[in-house]
Image (cartoon, rainbow, N blue to C red; front, side, top):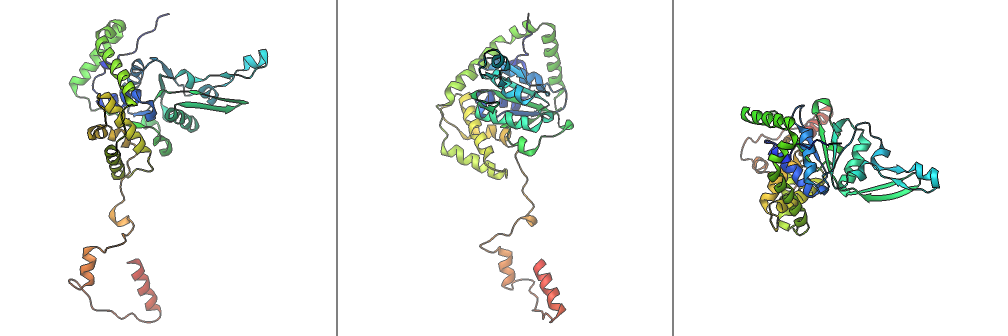
Length: 333
């Protein structure tokens, strides 16, 4: 039995932000997965599959939309129970994906509990199973890649936030890029092995770079300067919680490792900021809807109270119903 090779990652034309996101996730799977949004025909699945060859095991596990929780996390080995009466664990797809890529096409159509479970394991690197009389855990460090077409439905915000990176693809390819993409794809389809040999040197350089970056990662400290810049960017983006801060710091460290640095620079943080903030950024409310500020009064109010401009003479508020209307108007003001 022969297996058709994956389209080489090094042969992908354009899509530089997406390629960077996937490489960083391959260096540090703890970033928490990559969500790729885009219309049909943008080669989302091709790019995801190409990443597998840059990982230690080169393994790609595709998660069908019909997958059950038992098939995903693993369950009781019934054959062994029936044959010798011993309770044992039968691994699922999470175990099979260890040190590889777990790919979910149309992740927005997967049941929310399974997406939640996937993201939990992707972030922790450990699958813990407590069911059917079994208590079992095993390492499951994989790069989670989910793709979706927004026209077919959205992910709930709570799940969207849990993807480490998110990136939106669009159809802004210029004619020259389109020509080159089609030329390479036709060449690959005609002779996959020969096409891969053409890009073997570039592919090996990518694999070597990822391997060295993974080894360098643990020796790069999270310095205070980087943490302050990350905190500032997340504050400006008005994100909820601190998950974005954690993701951005890990990604900046992975970027520094990829660039063969010994420490995190500002440019490492800036390079990954949009990948971590794209799906978490919230618009600030307009000034009129913001809560009033306490402390020092604004300058124009201080001037008005001093009678410098537009001051009106005091008005007499009548007793009875008139007082109630006046009080109400004052309260609304």
